[in-house]
Length: 211
Image 1 (cartoon, rainbow, N blue to C red):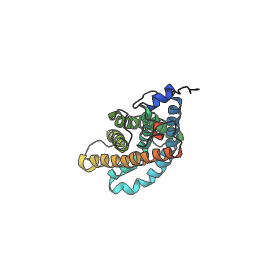
Image 2 (image 1 turned 135 degrees about the vertical axis):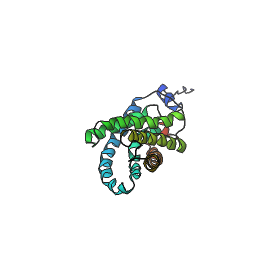
Image 3 (image 1 turned 120 degrees about the vertical axis):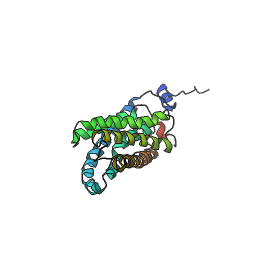
Image 4 (image 1 turned 60 degrees about the vertical axis):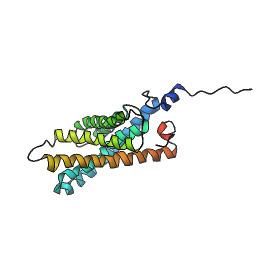
């Protein structure tokens, strides 16, 4: 007897189509879990950065190198879930969790989470959420790095005699973007690929295709 054709579900179809905007329950749950996990990382990194920033006082722009960790959840979520809004959702959750765990920065950190997520989102938007390889990982990391550097400079380091453009502002942007590319972009994509190899991402396109 001829076997009946098996058709994939509409949810699976939505996941397989490049640039799909439909969110499934697993997308929401995994993005939230990523945010919570990175929120704990933020809390620990805040303790480390508080100590590590002091030796960098001889060249203050170098402190931008400490920013990359804060940009990881947005880029990682975007590479893993591959849906519009994933980067912003994960980054905002991470910032909120770090606040609840005792962030020294107060409520402003949630605003940072939103801005950093939107910054990473821009990188994926520029590829129309259709490419998730090295080029997109680096692009999303660059736009995320620029977002947090611009926010830092606007709120805390305005161009002035104390923070001149060439001596502080531009180097700070460069170090922040470099840190974002290395940690959020390179380490972020390697992390997604490592998870994919374990089979944990079988529900996602990122776990079924090599990028």
